[in-house]
Image (cartoon, rainbow, N blue to C red):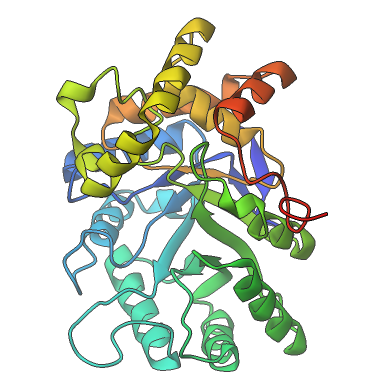
Length: 325
């Protein structure tokens, strides 16, 4: 396994990161523990979760699963870069969501308790909060850093101008600010190439793509269409499949001609993209994770990358040249 610095930060993370969104709802706890142990053995050190994963408000089921795995062998904690997120609703009462200083403090304390640790290495703001000023957000986060409960701060699902505003406010406070942004990025969804990726490169912010297989659509979905499970059965995913069926069919044939699995190619393509720090894979089963581990070994040549660009054209590069002169 190879490692990259997380943006301009000194900490290094594996080129593949372990996403845990399936742990609990789709992946039973014993299998989740098996996947985490295998990830550690394979050199994967970035473990990514969120307080809302598990999809039962206030319970943090996935964080609890990770916490019990860490508790089983305390030596594991210092071998991983543990990342979680906050923003989503964790209760029905006021101030149990978004990014107020009150919620940031409480959400962090609750995550630490569920994860059975005294600190998280990367605390990510799961979505932009248009109602809370960055001065308040940074004040709350600075306090958590000063208390040793958080080491680094990142964002997720933020537009380029949100990232810019956040980082400029951080610079005014003479603090490090953001070290990472996590957003959807894959062959089918390349919008971040317009402005998010350029903004991250400008500020030295690491980029962590999630949903690299677009809900399974890039994993050989047509070949297994009769037996689809998990996210590939969701209405949004089915609509995307109907919209892109011909393109996905051509992609699966291209991969077959190459002699490679579609999922491996999709992950490898991301690993070839400038600015990508670590690709977050979210396996549902140990077998899926084993397949993902093979991706870093697949090297795609310039001609192959060009052919994939032709199959899945992006926005045309960075803004404004992508749409103007």
